[in-house]
Image (cartoon, rainbow, N blue to C red; front, side, top):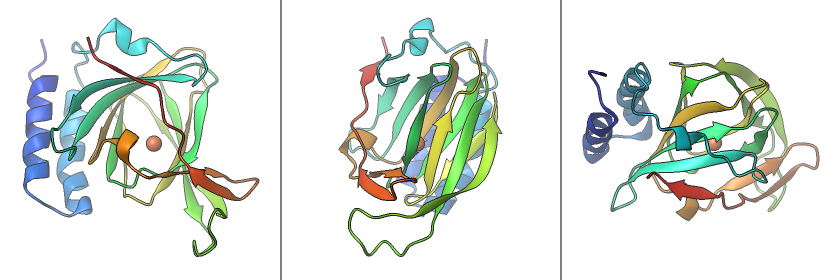
Length: 189
Ligand SMILES: [Fe+2]
């Protein structure tokens, strides 16, 4: 049995959000808790690994705050699949639960003044394994890939409900910024 349940984690995360801190302070307080809840994954259910084949990954919503100030979800990535660079327009934390995901951080080169245009360059690549965390500020841009031969699973926390956020996806080769596609999500059983 874990000494730190997913329910306790969500309660603690809710309390941190209620403190009204700035994004960096939220991340600072939240990351150690996210790492802690990733240590014992007995709360992970088999159906968290269910993926949408077309999308290449599967999202299971674990918690959404009534005021949408916090959402908690798992994401399972199919082998060889990933997602294009995107932002979140809120703070975010990803902590690995199973397998290793390649996370690439991108830096914007242009000033963002031309609608639909974005020049981004890959900046930093980090392999996120079980217990490893990475965090994001609202305008940070990242992409994810599962280079392995098995599905991976990670826990994701955001300071909003991403489905309701106006956020962007980027095509680095075409230098395009466009609205982020709506993801397929399912509720936890
Ligand atoms: Fe993301």
